[in-house]
Image (cartoon, rainbow, N blue to C red; front, side, top):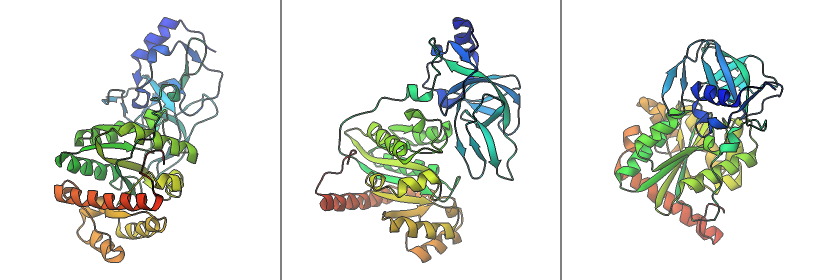
Length: 365
């Protein structure tokens, strides 16, 4: 353990560039730097920038993207990363040199990377941030409290995708904006992924009355989590974003359908009971058709397909002719008539589920 004047470290941590994933942490709790323990996912570190490579900016706690300079001190959190078009990275078992693998503030050791991506920015951990009694500060210590009860669940739609960058967050934002244009209260949550501010701000700007993600549950990322942890995150975020007058809840699930955590959720009957239907964002028609077949086999009601493939006129028409599911462009999702139609479909699905179970659909069901 590296002793350091309590007040000095608090000032030093406050002066460092603190990342988005640490936004709920009370940096004043940092009173010691610990250098003789192995890190765990979610542990906070003070690190120094050694060599700037791909990540040239860091998302701060307030959402601003700050430019990085070599020798900058950063407050980050350890976490795993699963990004098929960027990095595969894991929490190391030591406090040696590693990388900044996500601009939201994730420290990890790169295992592999996409061939078109530059190496990650290199950092040197200076120590784990600890409290006055030597307890390592972890994001889980600052998670929002769990909301109890078993209140009725609003109409809930989940947005899945074929891969990273297939248009999921944009679909969520456009649907949220379209619902707001109807004058109804709509909330949103991102259940899985890697901590990142822009996704949250985009949905908030679209008009969501509440927008939370897994970092609010104390996780820097959800890569490598067990199913029960994923279900707990899902239940808690749904409960927290649901109020008495919430009419629609829009959920985003990161990455593609074959990603380990996404697939675990989809194949969980408990998770499927938390949603009434889904939208699918795809990069191409083949992926869209395969996804629709898979989702319907679970079974899940696929209301529409969309995403970046709708930038083409031909691609979505190929998918529709093969799977029979309509496609929606960005402008469609923002139209009142389209949103009304989606709400009717979700209502019908929820009513059928209530008739089959004999119970009111509730968050805790």
